[in-house]
Image 1 (cartoon, rainbow, N blue to C red):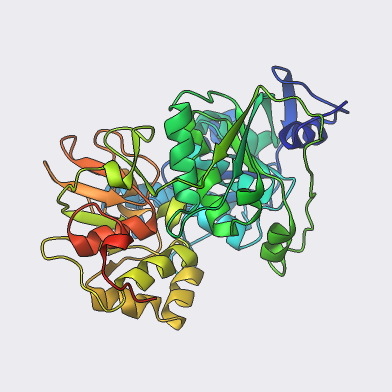
Image 2 (cartoon, rainbow, N blue to C red):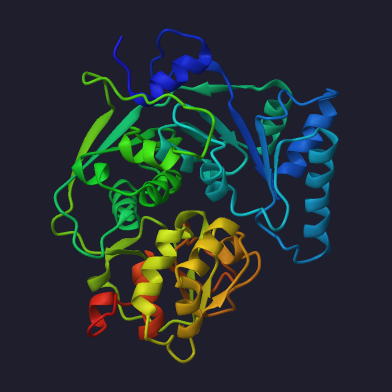
Length: 424
């Protein structure tokens, strides 16, 4: 029977020859993931079950990344619960300050997830790992607690929407623009409990960093998961990262899709999502020149080395506009070190940026960049709901690192093309 890549992964992990959309299956989980916000509740559920040990010490990842370094007593208490559980059960993939980074950045970076895996996390952006050709999806903390005990969960097989990107993207159009455009096309509920399968010639040429960005935001269209067929770019990324080879699967040529959407990028501009929804998307040329208070570059969506380098290339020899706060947070210690070695951090500092330690930071309005009433920000994050980054009367505009960096210099929302003779 012909299947999509998502259906193949689910079939393997449920012990079936084949599966079909809508089928309810029990699957074995390769990695169960939680963070400092979601893990404590999952741990409580685990403890209430009365089990003595986790299903596999090497298949659980606990990553305190949302409120670290701890910003207050409640966040310190949350982190302590996770730390003590990890020590009690000898969890292999537990990370402390100095080694910890954003969960969805460090799991691929450290080779903890590989193509063909099935990853379930108590965080909606667990869908990020689809960039590697894995099935990955978010669940609630209660479900995650049960998974930590049993290594299994129930899933309904999602139908698949195939997005085919063709054409030649312009200079500043990147993965963030492709996914924002897609969310604008589909709407925030347009792919509810569906798979978004990204394909086409444009996709084949995307770097892994850009693929991770796109898979990360599949959930913003309501998708259960986003996925790419693994290829040579995937293989090159995985080299020397993991002892596991993974399974390089692909959709059958005659696989059935709920729909196929063709997107030509020839005329596509960089995209900006206006408040207060990720699907409120417009080309940058159609966005009013909103005066900004803050620009944030980072998060599990765009906090990788390539993202920071793009921003630094635009900011080199320039300064952040007076009255604008530019906050940059590398997604992991490895990215931080790479960005120091290649001169990115120095360039960002020279331009007037503030560099924060690897963590989620202001993405969820937690700390290191909370917005006050009436403030407006451009952010490379994934959500701009009311109150997402601070006060409910603040405004967040989602964009790529290139648009964010240019806007920091201009002091308003704008494109790198507006900066005369950019230095690269």
